[in-house]
Image 1 (cartoon, rainbow, N blue to C red):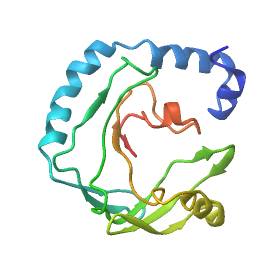
Image 2: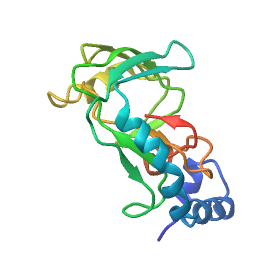
Image 3: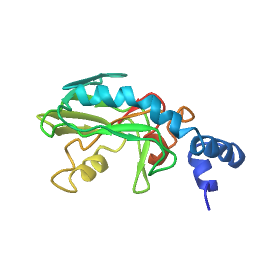
Image 4: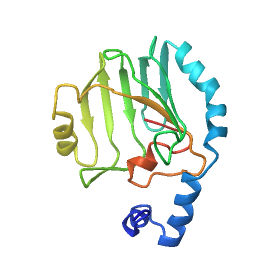
Length: 174
C-alpha cells in the first residue's frame, strides 16, 4: 500500500506527516502546471547551449539543440512536475557536484561529483567512489548524460532519497 512507513522513514518524517505530504504532491492541479510549463518547454526547444552554475564547483555546459522537451505534468506519472530533454551525446563539458543524497540499488550515496569531457564522465567521486564508478562501468553508455531535467513540484522542497520524488524537487536539476 502507498505511502509506506519506510518511505516516511527515508524522508525523515512521521508516517502522518508523510501521508499529508504524499497527498499534496500527488493531487496538485496538474492542468494548471501544464499551462505554466509551456513557456519553459518553448525555451528549451529554442535553446542550443545550457550552462549550469551551482553550489560547490558546479560549472557544466552542454547542447540541447534540436531536441524535443517533454513536459511531465501528471498524465503518465504521479507525483510529477518536471520538464526533460536529452543532451547532445558528446557535448557535456565541466563539473557537476550534486548537493542532494540518493540511493541506488539500496546503497546510499552523497556528495557525488562528476567531471565531463566530450560528453563522457572521466572522473566520478563521492561518499563511495569505488561503488559510484562500478555503477558507471555497468555498460558503454552509463558514463554519458541521458537526460537533463528541471523539477518544479511546489510541494517537494528537499531530497528524501526516493528518485520518484527527488527528481521533481522544486528548483532542482538533474
